[in-house]
Every structure is written in C-alpha cells, then in structure tokens.
Image 1 (cartoon, rainbow, N blue to C red):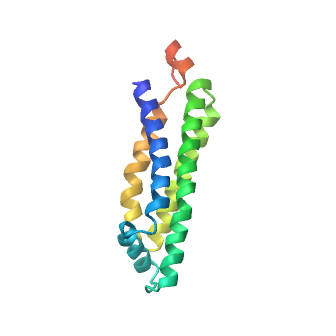
Image 2 (image 1 turned 60 degrees about the vertical axis):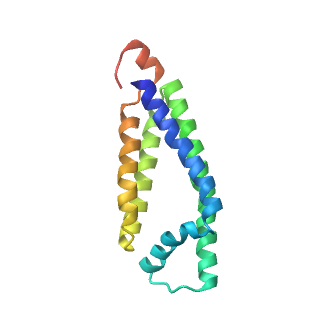
Image 3 (image 1 turned 30 degrees about the horizontal axis):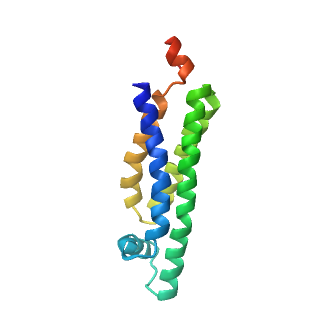
Length: 145
C-alpha cells in the first residue's frame, strides 16, 4: 500500500509539472476561452483586446509556477520517504492547505465557485495519501508515524 501512495503522490507532482507546461501553451488559445470568460464575469470586466491579452499572459506566466511546484512536490515526497523527516511531511501538508484555503477562498469571495469544485477533490486526493504515507525506515520496521 505504501508503494501505491508514494507513486500516486509522485504522479500528482508530475501531473502538475505537465499541467503547468500545458498551461503555458494553451493560455492564449481558444481552449482557455471558457475559463477566461468566467474570470471576466467574476471580476465584472468587459472584453477588450488589451485586457484579454494581459489576462492570458498572466495565465501563461502561471504555468511555470504550477510546473515548478509539481517538481518540488515530487522532491519533497521523495525525501520524506527516503529520510523520514517529519518536518518535510508537515511542510507538504501545510503548503497544500495554504494553497487550498487561499485559492479557494479568494476565488469564492470573487464569485469563482468553479475553483471550489476543482480544488476540493484535488486536496482530498493529495492530503489523504500524504497523511498515510510513511517513510521507508518505518515501513521496514512496521512502526507507525
């Protein structure tokens, strides 16, 4: 079971890395139009070409942040499993909760409830496996966290 949790979390990190790269490519395409339209509606901004280009450029710049977060997440999970340092696990849990609370809260405060529906299953699919993940040394000896 521990191997599954580990590979699942690594897949989450690599998925974020790939998603970030895809975001860079698709931010200025019609694939993002429904999302951008939701942003216009949430912030009560009318469509103007210069605003649309700025919005899409900002979303494009968001891609590297998501990609780098994914790689750092993988590195932290790897080191937690290899070394068993509780501070790594605590930092990962804290980082995920900070992202979830702030991203979801700010989005909801601005009427973007789609982030609530997207973020809630994602936070569960990250935190539950992370909570039960144990370092290799503890798995080998059979002790619990």
